Length: 441
Image 1 (tube, rainbow, N blue to C red):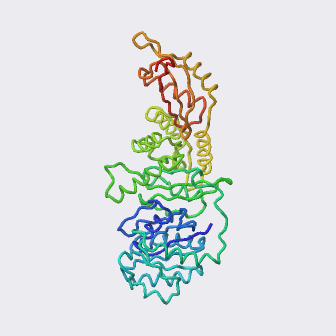
Image 2 (tube, rainbow, N blue to C red; image 1 turned 180 degrees about the vertical axis):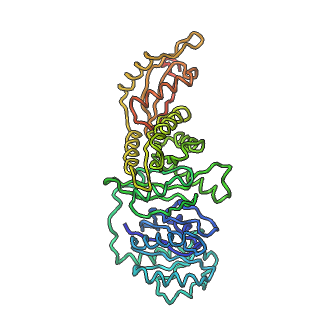
Image 3 (spheres, rainbow, N blue to C red; image 1 turned 180 degrees about the horizontal axis):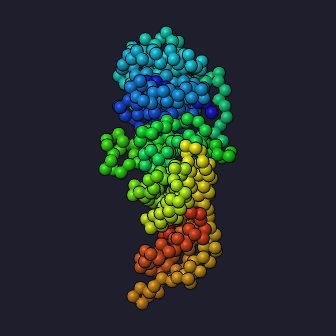
Protein backbone atom coordinates (compact mmCIF):
# COMPACT_ATOMS: atom_id res chain seq x y z
CA UNK A 1 0.00 0.00 0.00
CA UNK A 2 1.20 3.50 -0.87
CA UNK A 3 2.75 5.38 2.06
CA UNK A 4 2.45 9.14 2.48
CA UNK A 5 4.23 11.13 5.18
CA UNK A 6 3.02 14.56 6.33
CA UNK A 7 5.85 16.88 7.41
CA UNK A 8 6.19 20.55 8.27
CA UNK A 9 6.87 23.07 11.01
CA UNK A 10 4.93 23.03 14.28
CA UNK A 11 1.32 24.24 14.12
CA UNK A 12 1.07 24.00 10.31
CA UNK A 13 -1.96 21.74 10.71
CA UNK A 14 -0.38 18.32 10.11
CA UNK A 15 -2.51 16.52 12.68
CA UNK A 16 -5.66 18.24 11.40
CA UNK A 17 -4.89 17.01 7.87
CA UNK A 18 -4.06 13.55 9.24
CA UNK A 19 -7.45 13.41 11.00
CA UNK A 20 -9.17 14.59 7.82
CA UNK A 21 -7.53 11.87 5.73
CA UNK A 22 -8.16 8.99 8.16
CA UNK A 23 -11.73 10.14 8.80
CA UNK A 24 -11.60 10.38 12.59
CA UNK A 25 -9.97 12.39 15.35
CA UNK A 26 -7.02 10.04 15.70
CA UNK A 27 -4.60 12.83 16.67
CA UNK A 28 -4.98 15.54 19.29
CA UNK A 29 -5.13 18.96 17.64
CA UNK A 30 -4.14 22.14 19.49
CA UNK A 31 -3.01 25.69 18.79
CA UNK A 32 -0.02 24.98 21.03
CA UNK A 33 3.00 24.11 18.82
CA UNK A 34 4.78 20.81 19.42
CA UNK A 35 1.82 18.72 20.58
CA UNK A 36 2.70 15.91 18.15
CA UNK A 37 6.11 14.37 18.88
CA UNK A 38 5.95 10.74 17.75
CA UNK A 39 4.98 9.66 14.28
CA UNK A 40 1.48 8.22 13.92
CA UNK A 41 0.07 5.97 11.20
CA UNK A 42 -3.40 5.35 9.81
CA UNK A 43 -5.28 4.39 6.66
CA UNK A 44 -6.14 7.54 4.71
CA UNK A 45 -8.57 8.11 1.84
CA UNK A 46 -9.37 10.82 -0.68
CA UNK A 47 -12.31 9.63 -2.77
CA UNK A 48 -11.20 6.31 -4.35
CA UNK A 49 -7.52 6.72 -3.40
CA UNK A 50 -6.49 4.68 -0.34
CA UNK A 51 -3.07 4.87 1.28
CA UNK A 52 -1.18 4.62 4.55
CA UNK A 53 -0.59 8.09 5.98
CA UNK A 54 2.05 9.01 8.57
CA UNK A 55 1.76 12.07 10.81
CA UNK A 56 5.01 13.45 12.24
CA UNK A 57 6.08 16.00 14.82
CA UNK A 58 7.12 19.49 13.81
CA UNK A 59 10.67 20.65 14.38
CA UNK A 60 11.10 23.31 17.04
CA UNK A 61 14.55 24.37 18.20
CA UNK A 62 13.09 25.62 21.48
CA UNK A 63 12.44 22.11 22.84
CA UNK A 64 14.73 19.39 24.10
CA UNK A 65 13.08 16.89 21.76
CA UNK A 66 14.14 18.54 18.45
CA UNK A 67 16.79 15.98 17.47
CA UNK A 68 14.55 13.06 18.35
CA UNK A 69 11.63 14.52 16.35
CA UNK A 70 13.93 14.96 13.33
CA UNK A 71 15.02 11.33 13.68
CA UNK A 72 11.36 10.32 13.51
CA UNK A 73 10.86 12.47 10.39
CA UNK A 74 13.94 10.96 8.72
CA UNK A 75 12.72 7.44 9.47
CA UNK A 76 9.29 8.27 8.03
CA UNK A 77 10.85 9.76 4.88
CA UNK A 78 12.86 6.61 4.31
CA UNK A 79 9.76 4.41 4.40
CA UNK A 80 7.33 6.73 2.54
CA UNK A 81 6.58 6.86 -1.20
CA UNK A 82 5.17 10.41 -1.31
CA UNK A 83 5.78 13.46 0.90
CA UNK A 84 3.15 16.05 1.87
CA UNK A 85 5.08 19.20 2.83
CA UNK A 86 2.51 21.23 4.76
CA UNK A 87 2.95 24.95 5.42
CA UNK A 88 0.79 27.54 7.15
CA UNK A 89 -0.25 29.82 4.27
CA UNK A 90 -1.18 32.64 6.67
CA UNK A 91 2.40 33.06 7.85
CA UNK A 92 5.53 33.52 5.72
CA UNK A 93 8.00 31.63 7.88
CA UNK A 94 11.63 31.68 6.77
CA UNK A 95 12.18 28.43 8.67
CA UNK A 96 10.19 26.73 5.91
CA UNK A 97 13.04 27.60 3.52
CA UNK A 98 15.57 25.92 5.80
CA UNK A 99 13.28 22.95 6.16
CA UNK A 100 12.82 22.78 2.36
CA UNK A 101 16.60 22.80 1.81
CA UNK A 102 16.98 20.01 4.36
CA UNK A 103 14.19 18.07 2.63
CA UNK A 104 15.86 18.38 -0.78
CA UNK A 105 19.05 16.91 0.69
CA UNK A 106 17.28 14.07 2.48
CA UNK A 107 15.00 12.65 -0.21
CA UNK A 108 14.41 12.48 -3.93
CA UNK A 109 10.84 11.21 -3.51
CA UNK A 110 7.88 13.22 -4.87
CA UNK A 111 7.07 16.18 -2.60
CA UNK A 112 3.68 17.89 -2.81
CA UNK A 113 3.71 21.39 -1.33
CA UNK A 114 0.40 21.96 0.50
CA UNK A 115 -0.61 25.44 1.65
CA UNK A 116 -2.96 24.95 4.59
CA UNK A 117 -5.37 27.33 6.37
CA UNK A 118 -6.68 28.87 3.12
CA UNK A 119 -10.25 29.26 4.34
CA UNK A 120 -10.99 32.58 2.62
CA UNK A 121 -8.51 32.95 -0.24
CA UNK A 122 -5.36 31.54 -1.78
CA UNK A 123 -2.57 33.19 0.12
CA UNK A 124 0.50 34.44 -1.72
CA UNK A 125 2.67 33.58 1.27
CA UNK A 126 3.93 30.32 -0.28
CA UNK A 127 5.52 32.03 -3.30
CA UNK A 128 8.84 32.17 -1.45
CA UNK A 129 9.04 28.37 -1.79
CA UNK A 130 8.53 28.26 -5.57
CA UNK A 131 12.24 27.86 -6.34
CA UNK A 132 12.39 24.40 -4.75
CA UNK A 133 10.36 22.90 -7.61
CA UNK A 134 7.97 20.97 -5.42
CA UNK A 135 4.71 19.70 -6.93
CA UNK A 136 1.96 22.25 -6.38
CA UNK A 137 1.31 24.31 -4.36
CA UNK A 138 -2.07 22.83 -3.50
CA UNK A 139 -4.27 25.21 -1.49
CA UNK A 140 -6.44 23.60 1.20
CA UNK A 141 -8.10 24.08 4.55
CA UNK A 142 -7.79 20.79 6.41
CA UNK A 143 -10.03 22.04 9.20
CA UNK A 144 -12.87 23.07 6.84
CA UNK A 145 -12.38 20.25 4.29
CA UNK A 146 -11.59 22.65 1.44
CA UNK A 147 -9.30 21.91 -1.50
CA UNK A 148 -9.45 18.10 -1.21
CA UNK A 149 -10.34 17.83 -4.92
CA UNK A 150 -7.14 19.70 -5.83
CA UNK A 151 -5.13 17.48 -3.47
CA UNK A 152 -6.72 14.43 -5.09
CA UNK A 153 -5.65 15.62 -8.55
CA UNK A 154 -2.08 16.30 -7.42
CA UNK A 155 -1.76 12.94 -5.66
CA UNK A 156 -3.36 11.00 -8.53
CA UNK A 157 -0.84 12.53 -10.91
CA UNK A 158 2.06 11.50 -8.66
CA UNK A 159 0.98 7.91 -8.09
CA UNK A 160 0.13 7.30 -11.74
CA UNK A 161 3.70 6.20 -12.34
CA UNK A 162 4.21 4.53 -8.98
CA UNK A 163 3.57 0.91 -8.13
CA UNK A 164 0.89 0.70 -5.45
CA UNK A 165 2.49 -2.22 -3.62
CA UNK A 166 0.69 -4.94 -1.67
CA UNK A 167 -2.64 -4.76 0.10
CA UNK A 168 -2.95 -4.95 3.86
CA UNK A 169 -2.79 -8.68 4.67
CA UNK A 170 -5.39 -8.32 7.38
CA UNK A 171 -8.26 -5.91 7.84
CA UNK A 172 -7.60 -3.15 10.36
CA UNK A 173 -11.06 -3.75 11.79
CA UNK A 174 -10.38 -7.38 12.79
CA UNK A 175 -6.71 -7.04 13.72
CA UNK A 176 -5.93 -7.45 17.42
CA UNK A 177 -5.49 -4.05 19.07
CA UNK A 178 -3.44 -3.85 22.27
CA UNK A 179 -3.35 -0.63 24.32
CA UNK A 180 -0.40 -0.01 26.65
CA UNK A 181 -1.62 2.12 29.55
CA UNK A 182 -0.38 3.26 32.93
CA UNK A 183 0.89 6.20 34.91
CA UNK A 184 3.54 8.54 33.42
CA UNK A 185 7.13 7.33 33.19
CA UNK A 186 6.51 3.62 33.86
CA UNK A 187 8.28 2.68 30.61
CA UNK A 188 5.48 2.24 28.05
CA UNK A 189 7.39 3.75 25.13
CA UNK A 190 10.63 2.02 26.13
CA UNK A 191 8.74 -1.28 26.08
CA UNK A 192 7.47 -0.60 22.56
CA UNK A 193 10.89 0.45 21.32
CA UNK A 194 12.32 -2.76 22.76
CA UNK A 195 9.68 -4.82 20.97
CA UNK A 196 10.23 -3.04 17.66
CA UNK A 197 14.03 -3.04 18.05
CA UNK A 198 14.21 0.60 16.98
CA UNK A 199 13.75 4.09 18.42
CA UNK A 200 10.17 4.14 17.16
CA UNK A 201 8.95 6.40 19.98
CA UNK A 202 10.58 9.28 21.79
CA UNK A 203 11.77 8.19 25.22
CA UNK A 204 12.82 10.47 28.05
CA UNK A 205 13.12 10.31 31.82
CA UNK A 206 10.85 13.35 31.88
CA UNK A 207 7.31 12.18 32.79
CA UNK A 208 4.71 12.90 30.11
CA UNK A 209 6.99 12.53 27.06
CA UNK A 210 4.27 10.68 25.14
CA UNK A 211 1.60 13.30 24.60
CA UNK A 212 -0.90 11.50 22.36
CA UNK A 213 -2.01 7.95 21.60
CA UNK A 214 0.00 6.39 18.78
CA UNK A 215 -1.09 3.36 16.69
CA UNK A 216 1.74 1.12 15.50
CA UNK A 217 1.56 -1.93 13.23
CA UNK A 218 3.64 -4.78 14.64
CA UNK A 219 4.40 -8.20 13.17
CA UNK A 220 4.66 -10.75 15.99
CA UNK A 221 5.78 -14.10 14.59
CA UNK A 222 3.82 -13.55 11.38
CA UNK A 223 0.69 -12.11 13.03
CA UNK A 224 -0.07 -8.44 12.49
CA UNK A 225 -1.08 -6.57 15.63
CA UNK A 226 -1.88 -2.90 16.27
CA UNK A 227 -0.07 -1.61 19.36
CA UNK A 228 -1.42 1.60 20.89
CA UNK A 229 1.02 3.68 22.94
CA UNK A 230 -0.77 6.13 25.22
CA UNK A 231 -0.04 9.15 27.35
CA UNK A 232 0.47 8.48 31.05
CA UNK A 233 -2.73 8.78 33.07
CA UNK A 234 -2.34 10.75 36.29
CA UNK A 235 -4.87 11.36 39.04
CA UNK A 236 -7.37 14.05 38.08
CA UNK A 237 -6.10 16.24 40.90
CA UNK A 238 -2.63 16.26 39.30
CA UNK A 239 -3.73 17.11 35.75
CA UNK A 240 -2.33 20.58 35.21
CA UNK A 241 -4.15 21.97 32.16
CA UNK A 242 -6.83 21.38 29.54
CA UNK A 243 -4.32 20.03 27.03
CA UNK A 244 -3.14 17.30 29.39
CA UNK A 245 -6.78 16.53 30.13
CA UNK A 246 -7.36 15.95 26.42
CA UNK A 247 -4.40 13.58 26.23
CA UNK A 248 -5.81 11.61 29.15
CA UNK A 249 -9.14 11.46 27.32
CA UNK A 250 -7.32 10.05 24.28
CA UNK A 251 -5.76 7.38 26.50
CA UNK A 252 -9.20 6.41 27.82
CA UNK A 253 -10.48 6.36 24.24
CA UNK A 254 -7.59 4.02 23.34
CA UNK A 255 -8.84 1.56 25.97
CA UNK A 256 -12.24 1.59 24.27
CA UNK A 257 -10.65 0.93 20.84
CA UNK A 258 -8.52 -1.95 22.08
CA UNK A 259 -9.27 -5.64 22.61
CA UNK A 260 -6.57 -6.28 25.22
CA UNK A 261 -5.04 -3.80 27.65
CA UNK A 262 -1.52 -3.96 29.08
CA UNK A 263 -1.47 -2.20 32.45
CA UNK A 264 2.17 -1.32 32.95
CA UNK A 265 3.48 -0.72 36.46
CA UNK A 266 6.78 0.52 37.80
CA UNK A 267 8.05 -2.30 40.02
CA UNK A 268 9.73 0.23 42.28
CA UNK A 269 6.36 1.87 43.00
CA UNK A 270 4.13 -1.19 42.96
CA UNK A 271 0.40 -0.95 42.34
CA UNK A 272 -1.52 2.11 43.53
CA UNK A 273 -5.08 3.41 43.50
CA UNK A 274 -4.62 5.13 40.12
CA UNK A 275 -3.52 1.83 38.54
CA UNK A 276 -6.56 0.06 39.96
CA UNK A 277 -8.84 2.80 38.60
CA UNK A 278 -7.34 2.34 35.12
CA UNK A 279 -7.75 -1.44 35.37
CA UNK A 280 -11.37 -1.05 36.50
CA UNK A 281 -12.10 1.12 33.44
CA UNK A 282 -10.65 -1.57 31.15
CA UNK A 283 -12.56 -4.41 32.84
CA UNK A 284 -15.86 -2.48 32.80
CA UNK A 285 -15.26 -1.94 29.10
CA UNK A 286 -15.02 -5.70 28.61
CA UNK A 287 -11.35 -5.66 27.65
CA UNK A 288 -8.89 -8.44 28.28
CA UNK A 289 -6.16 -7.27 30.65
CA UNK A 290 -2.68 -8.26 31.73
CA UNK A 291 -0.40 -6.58 34.26
CA UNK A 292 3.24 -5.94 33.38
CA UNK A 293 5.72 -5.16 36.14
CA UNK A 294 8.48 -3.19 34.44
CA UNK A 295 11.96 -2.43 35.84
CA UNK A 296 11.99 -5.89 37.43
CA UNK A 297 15.79 -5.95 37.27
CA UNK A 298 15.86 -3.16 39.88
CA UNK A 299 13.94 -5.18 42.48
CA UNK A 300 15.89 -7.22 45.02
CA UNK A 301 15.27 -10.98 44.92
CA UNK A 302 13.93 -10.99 48.49
CA UNK A 303 11.27 -8.39 47.60
CA UNK A 304 10.02 -9.97 44.37
CA UNK A 305 7.70 -12.60 45.83
CA UNK A 306 6.24 -10.01 48.25
CA UNK A 307 5.46 -7.64 45.38
CA UNK A 308 3.82 -10.35 43.26
CA UNK A 309 1.74 -11.47 46.25
CA UNK A 310 0.60 -7.90 46.96
CA UNK A 311 -0.37 -7.27 43.32
CA UNK A 312 -2.34 -10.52 43.19
CA UNK A 313 -4.11 -9.60 46.41
CA UNK A 314 -5.19 -6.25 44.95
CA UNK A 315 -6.49 -7.96 41.80
CA UNK A 316 -8.80 -10.27 43.73
CA UNK A 317 -9.99 -7.84 46.41
CA UNK A 318 -10.31 -4.69 44.28
CA UNK A 319 -10.85 -5.89 40.71
CA UNK A 320 -12.61 -9.21 41.39
CA UNK A 321 -10.57 -10.66 38.56
CA UNK A 322 -7.38 -12.71 38.50
CA UNK A 323 -5.03 -11.02 36.04
CA UNK A 324 -1.92 -12.59 34.48
CA UNK A 325 1.25 -10.82 35.58
CA UNK A 326 4.44 -10.66 33.52
CA UNK A 327 7.71 -9.26 34.91
CA UNK A 328 10.00 -7.49 32.43
CA UNK A 329 12.82 -5.03 31.98
CA UNK A 330 11.89 -2.94 28.94
CA UNK A 331 15.26 -1.18 29.01
CA UNK A 332 17.13 -4.49 28.81
CA UNK A 333 14.61 -6.17 26.51
CA UNK A 334 13.90 -8.86 29.09
CA UNK A 335 10.73 -10.95 28.43
CA UNK A 336 9.05 -8.23 26.32
CA UNK A 337 7.97 -10.80 23.72
CA UNK A 338 6.33 -12.85 26.48
CA UNK A 339 3.95 -9.94 27.08
CA UNK A 340 2.60 -10.15 23.51
CA UNK A 341 2.32 -13.94 23.72
CA UNK A 342 0.20 -13.52 26.84
CA UNK A 343 -1.96 -10.88 25.10
CA UNK A 344 -2.59 -13.29 22.22
CA UNK A 345 -3.60 -15.98 24.71
CA UNK A 346 -6.05 -13.59 26.40
CA UNK A 347 -7.40 -12.46 23.00
CA UNK A 348 -8.05 -16.05 21.93
CA UNK A 349 -9.91 -16.68 25.19
CA UNK A 350 -12.00 -13.51 24.70
CA UNK A 351 -13.32 -15.05 21.47
CA UNK A 352 -13.92 -18.51 22.91
CA UNK A 353 -17.38 -20.06 22.52
CA UNK A 354 -18.60 -22.68 25.00
CA UNK A 355 -21.21 -25.27 24.02
CA UNK A 356 -24.54 -25.08 25.80
CA UNK A 357 -24.20 -28.69 26.99
CA UNK A 358 -20.86 -27.98 28.70
CA UNK A 359 -22.25 -24.85 30.30
CA UNK A 360 -25.28 -26.58 31.78
CA UNK A 361 -23.22 -29.50 33.07
CA UNK A 362 -21.02 -26.93 34.80
CA UNK A 363 -24.06 -25.10 36.20
CA UNK A 364 -25.46 -28.30 37.74
CA UNK A 365 -22.12 -28.99 39.47
CA UNK A 366 -21.76 -25.37 40.64
CA UNK A 367 -25.24 -25.31 42.21
CA UNK A 368 -24.72 -28.71 43.84
CA UNK A 369 -21.47 -27.53 45.45
CA UNK A 370 -22.94 -24.26 46.64
CA UNK A 371 -26.64 -23.53 46.33
CA UNK A 372 -28.20 -20.11 46.78
CA UNK A 373 -29.66 -19.54 50.29
CA UNK A 374 -33.44 -19.46 50.60
CA UNK A 375 -35.10 -16.09 50.18
CA UNK A 376 -38.04 -15.79 52.62
CA UNK A 377 -38.32 -19.56 52.54
CA UNK A 378 -38.33 -19.64 48.75
CA UNK A 379 -35.80 -21.65 46.72
CA UNK A 380 -33.79 -19.90 44.00
CA UNK A 381 -33.71 -22.23 40.99
CA UNK A 382 -30.92 -21.87 38.42
CA UNK A 383 -32.50 -23.49 35.37
CA UNK A 384 -30.53 -22.90 32.16
CA UNK A 385 -27.44 -21.09 30.87
CA UNK A 386 -26.28 -20.21 27.35
CA UNK A 387 -23.56 -18.05 25.84
CA UNK A 388 -24.87 -14.94 24.12
CA UNK A 389 -21.67 -13.11 23.12
CA UNK A 390 -17.88 -12.84 22.91
CA UNK A 391 -15.30 -10.06 23.41
CA UNK A 392 -16.04 -10.23 26.31
CA UNK A 393 -17.74 -13.60 26.82
CA UNK A 394 -21.35 -13.03 27.89
CA UNK A 395 -23.89 -15.50 29.26
CA UNK A 396 -27.61 -15.57 29.92
CA UNK A 397 -28.78 -17.55 32.95
CA UNK A 398 -32.47 -18.28 33.40
CA UNK A 399 -33.79 -18.55 36.97
CA UNK A 400 -37.13 -18.16 38.73
CA UNK A 401 -36.47 -14.92 40.67
CA UNK A 402 -33.39 -13.15 39.19
CA UNK A 403 -34.06 -9.95 41.15
CA UNK A 404 -33.53 -11.85 44.41
CA UNK A 405 -30.17 -13.40 43.53
CA UNK A 406 -27.52 -12.16 45.92
CA UNK A 407 -24.63 -10.21 44.36
CA UNK A 408 -22.05 -12.44 46.05
CA UNK A 409 -23.67 -15.54 44.55
CA UNK A 410 -23.68 -13.97 41.11
CA UNK A 411 -19.97 -13.30 41.63
CA UNK A 412 -19.49 -16.94 42.63
CA UNK A 413 -21.04 -18.08 39.34
CA UNK A 414 -19.12 -15.54 37.30
CA UNK A 415 -15.82 -16.58 38.86
CA UNK A 416 -16.72 -20.21 38.24
CA UNK A 417 -17.27 -19.49 34.55
CA UNK A 418 -13.90 -17.73 34.33
CA UNK A 419 -11.93 -20.45 36.09
CA UNK A 420 -13.52 -23.33 34.21
CA UNK A 421 -13.55 -21.97 30.66
CA UNK A 422 -11.23 -18.96 30.30
CA UNK A 423 -7.68 -17.86 31.04
CA UNK A 424 -6.81 -15.18 33.59
CA UNK A 425 -7.44 -11.61 32.52
CA UNK A 426 -10.74 -12.26 30.71
CA UNK A 427 -13.80 -10.42 32.12
CA UNK A 428 -17.07 -12.36 31.96
CA UNK A 429 -20.60 -10.94 31.77
CA UNK A 430 -23.49 -12.84 33.39
CA UNK A 431 -27.08 -11.70 32.74
CA UNK A 432 -29.84 -13.17 34.91
CA UNK A 433 -33.22 -13.60 33.23
CA UNK A 434 -36.61 -14.77 34.46
CA UNK A 435 -38.06 -17.84 32.80
CA UNK A 436 -41.28 -17.17 30.93
CA UNK A 437 -44.44 -19.21 31.46
CA UNK A 438 -45.54 -20.30 27.95
CA UNK A 439 -49.18 -20.48 29.13
CA UNK A 440 -49.30 -16.84 30.23
CA UNK A 441 -49.96 -14.32 27.50
